[in-house]
Image 1 (cartoon, one colour):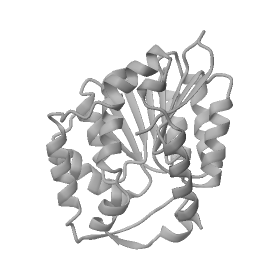
Image 2: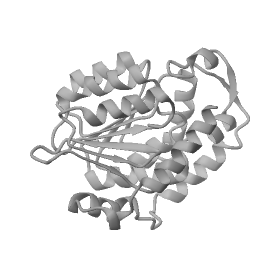
Image 3: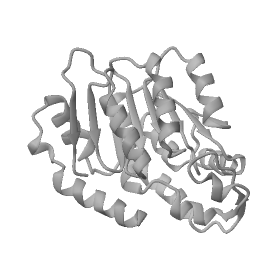
Image 4: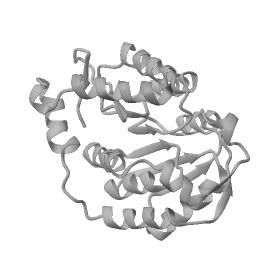
Length: 261
């Protein structure tokens, strides 16, 4: 039933979403044209995808610690790294889109909640080399693999923290003067997603971009996305099905876009 619902949501989105030619906002049109639909190869992509391929053949096993939506099933479970690489990593298409967004907005600090094996983190770090990327992973053994990914790719602008998002995010928000870009890729539950969203609000500014992963994951995530869209501080959202973008441009009329990707 869950798979049926997800694919139904996908087809509804596919047929209701617009391309750049159906968008009348100059800002969104430019974002679509120059970032979302920019499929040109980037010089950093090959090394990251080679690392992904290596992880997909890694037969070593790790013990999973999960604080999110899968915690009832996954805690303490042994999984092969190659299984995580095949099933849990962001697809290349999505990871590269997130990288292009980071490059476009040039944030001073990027926060990622949900490191997994470090592939999307690596895209963020390579695409925006002048940014400091702070990434949080709940599972210590997964974090160890991610750190090796960063070492292998010679990333110097990544800080990896291990722990529960509910503990780590408030600490980060306390230490940072503002949020520039945040990518939430973990704990896919309505209550948690909204808790992180509301925690971030005091630190957002006009250039802040929040990226929410898997906004069609479940009925709860769809409800969370709707509540986020309706919040009075939010002025612009872009629903790309796989991810949702949230912006806070003051003085702009509230607009919501569904874009085919």
